[in-house]
Image 1 (cartoon, rainbow, N blue to C red):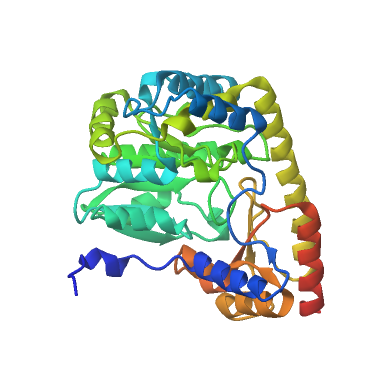
Image 2: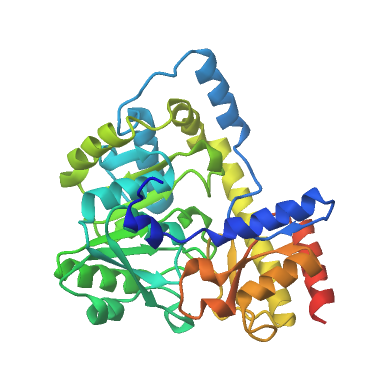
Length: 385
């Protein structure tokens, strides 16, 4: 038996995947399951991206690229920040990565020493804390309830920062809650972290899927942040494994060195194909799809309230509803099993996302078409009433 690193024991299973496996087993038996579990858009890459991939492959452009990504893609991403978010970003600050997970791995390798603590909200996306653990750090989950919009706030930094704390990771909009941090609140949080000489990493992979007010990148607030983004959610390219970082100018060479050694380069084919995401006709499609997600959210919220699936904070982004199910069950994991086996609806129990009252919550994804969501609501109504 090989001896494993002790950090393996500190990385929990991804329970959402376990639920999905159960759903797949039922489907294999002929059951029809309404999927409201996985955070993957039902939309896929737009035609222009697929065509660009085909052209790139036929042209034989499959060799390694620069470790930080091809220059045209970095320039296109910078242009997107300017036109969509009104923020000027030097393309040299953009590091193209193997997905947002690859971006987080690079960031934690660069910023997290062995034993260093990283603050993040509870609930939070599980991979964020596990990547910190894999880098040798210690994730510190801080309970953040409905009164905090399930997000970290400046007061959390003041109360929980210790000599071992290296920085914070926040996501806006976040997974599993779909809630964002207000710009003034985020600015105050950044100031508190900066005063303690820590890093602030902002996960913005759902920023493009924001539904209320202006979509504002945290880059508008400060230029000493680490920003993570991805082509998976707004651009609907999950399996292409392509993301990016925006880093302060003085850290570009650091991240380039790490990328050269750890990943060589992101997928060449995916990089060239992703250039087509920024064509006007592609952006029009993405905006139409964003509106479709918003319509799904606006359909589900009153239906959930009607069914007693309370939503204490209205999600303003992503494609998740974080529902308090205490009116129906004391344990959300058991309730998720009941929904799956008795109603044929697959949702994710809160235990994936932390320990702070997560046994009371289910995460529902509305990354599926409206007809299936309506069927899911009808099934849950029959079960609950």
